[in-house]
Amino acid sequence: MYPSILIVEDEQRVANLLQTGLTENGYHCLVAYDGTMGLKLFQSNEVNLVISDVVLPGINGFELSKKIREINPSVPIIMLTALGSTDDKLDGFDAGADDYLVKPFDFRELNARIKVLLKREYKAIAPVKTQIEYADLHIDLNTKEVKRGDVVIALSPKEYNLLVYMVQNAEKVISRTDISEKVWNTHFDTGTNFIDVYINYLRKKIDRDFDKKLIHTKVGMGFILTDKL
Ligand code: CA
Image (cartoon, rainbow, N blue to C red; front, top):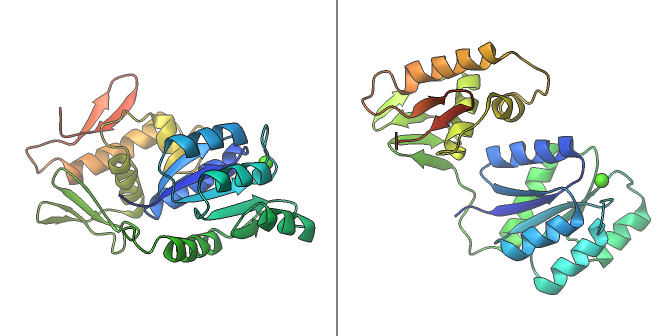
């Protein structure tokens, strides 16, 4: 298991950005769009770190922090806010937050602070995942080397990102919209053809020379990466 991060953020754009970035860095993400949902997810999942916005519908970030602290006194909590006043910062620490970032924040900065907090609090848990595997597919997230069995497969950066996303969501149907939002970070309509073209590039490299095909089309729905078809 790799560290699990609960993201509580009502701005969907920021939530998506966090989820994509953290997933790419090998974390497992849970996303809640309000404080109540955040608390529910915290109670029903194993969470290793919480990132919460301050201004949220329902329970705000400070109240959420306090409630989380009652359940788990040591889970690291990072507060995000657009306000950035000293009072907010103090309130945040008062509520039990371990760290504080003002939006818009630098993703690398956030990532660095997450690493420090996880190291401090969770010395025992497994390090951030650097390898992902599915069937005979191996992806090294550090060197970005992709292999099927012992065969090294060279991918372009876009093909690589698409493959990582598909492997992280293996055995789930993913739509073209999912791909354009999560892999290309675009919300505008890039045209389905664009994505199909990349899926085909990927198929040529990942599947064409192998007996077991991993990438499958689900007509009218999208694509699925699975070794069960
Ligand atoms: Ca907010």
